Image 1: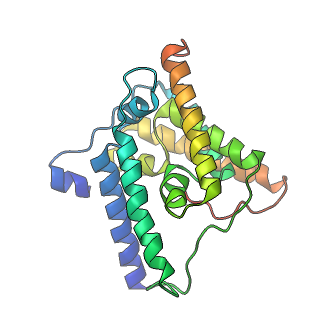
Image 2: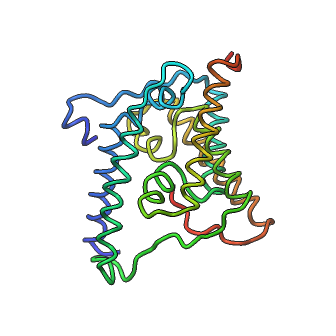
Length: 150
Length: 80
């Protein structure tokens, strides 16, 4: 990995983290308010998702006119097409965990720098969950699950 | 940390969940992200932005389950 790629990754990470902090996605109380449709519903985070998708779609649109990225040999886009019970089961488990803690991988990692024990506990458990998947997947089908985008 | 520099304060991170719930939540998020090949950023932002049908299915699924979980915890007496 050359220097310009490292700088690009650093800038992208800074921007993503800044966006997470600015939008309130890092605040579990806010996230749980968004998920609490029955009471105290706070729909503001829906605008965060909509805005992020719109900007991201612009990026994917630009990509169509390019044969290769500026800093890499080729684009890495998830190629998985599989839509089976395993895939949806994973999404369901993720949803339950997200609903319990109010944290998901990106914001949890970003919030780590604040040094809160609660966040560290969550991230440790999250890594444990990923490890558990790796351990159980080996004796399972052995089929690659496609690119994982946490 | 960039946010700290610009906004002059740390972003709010308010966590009410007790540790056992955080641990269970973390395990499920970690395992689910791997099994489901993505999370809120991966499927929610990138997947929807490139119109991936299975990302849409994943987003609908985890949103529904997350909302149901919050409902049970807050209104179904699952909290301590």
